Structure formats: C-alpha cells, structure tokens
Length: 136
Image (cartoon, one colour):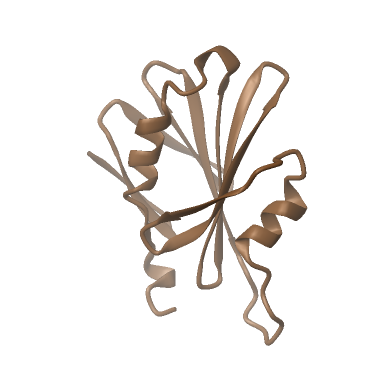
C-alpha cells in the first residue's frame, strides 16, 4: 500500500493505483486508466460565522446532482451524489471535518460506470485527518 499524505488528509492506495498532485488537487488513477479520483481540500477561515454543512454546500455548488446520500469515511462525513455529463459519469463527495471540506470526484466513461466503485470506496475508507486537523 502507498500512503498519500497532505496537511489536511491522508489515505492509502492499493499498489495498482498512483497519485500525482496538480496545484491544490491530488489526482488518483489505477493502472487500467478507467477513471480518475480527485481530492481537493478547502479550509474555512476561523471566524464566528456559522459554517455551512457539507450537504448545504453540495446542493449549492452541484445543482446537477438530484439525489444526495449521506456518506462517511473515518472522521470525515457529508454527502455523495452522481450525475452524467457528455458521455461520463461523475460521482461527487463533499466531506467535512473541523474547518476542512474535502471535495472529491470520481469520473469515468459512461460505459465503465460501476467498475471501480468498490476500489474507490476502499480508498476513501482509509481517509484520516492530516496533521493540520489533529487538534480540531
């Protein structure tokens, strides 16, 4: 297993999967090249304003998803939903922990829908907070 670590999250990848960082996003693919899992961490400023929940943010930012389902991976929790777009299936997760919101997407061709579901859920299942979130 390979360990992928950022300041805000950490997860483990099976040997056939690899990751590379592109600006603020970590992109994860398997050797078959069926789809791509991408994770981006957004950090809320510490202020007294009430924070929007991951579900509220998801509904606002992703109106193309009609059905959101509760999702939890370790200490991160929120919602997940999917939609089809131009021959692709897009699965999105909005997962919060403390001041962090992880925006995760998995995109694959429509004909490959469902092929990597178990592997992607296994990968996200290893998700733990990074050092910057340990005291929240």
